[in-house]
Amino acid sequence: MTQMAKKNEVSVDSLVAAVVAGLQEKKGNKIVSLDLRNLNSAFADFFVIAHGTSNRQVDALADSVEEIVRKTVGDRPAHREGQQESDWVLLDYINVVVHIFSEEKRDFYAIEELWGDAVRREHADH
Image (cartoon, rainbow, N blue to C red; front, side, top):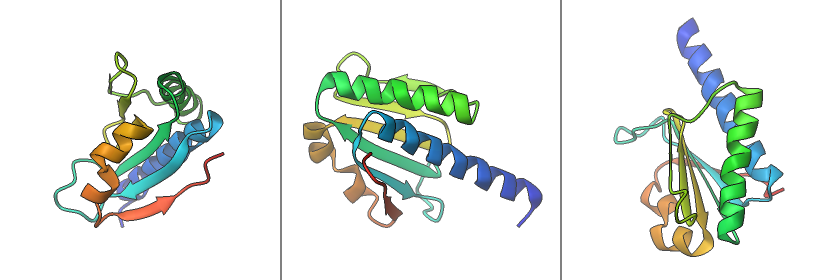
């Protein structure tokens, strides 16, 4: 493994850890990371998925992730979608894409099932 590859891997792992911490900070539910690095069809290295019990909590989770990632890793999302409805907020950190759903939308879209070949890791909720 080259030095640059090691640096990128550490950066991605640090980013995932910061995202998870942000979700835990506001009591995100069923926090899961999917390692997509070994899948040819993946457009990111990781998905991190969680849900909130209300639209207000979905927004709070997204804000918490942004704040903790900025403080610990010094990164900001390249793109944020879904603020209007607050039933699915997507934070795109290029290599790591964060999906924060309402419980109903998470069940409906079932992203974990779509990426069933990914290495799945469940994280403590809080």
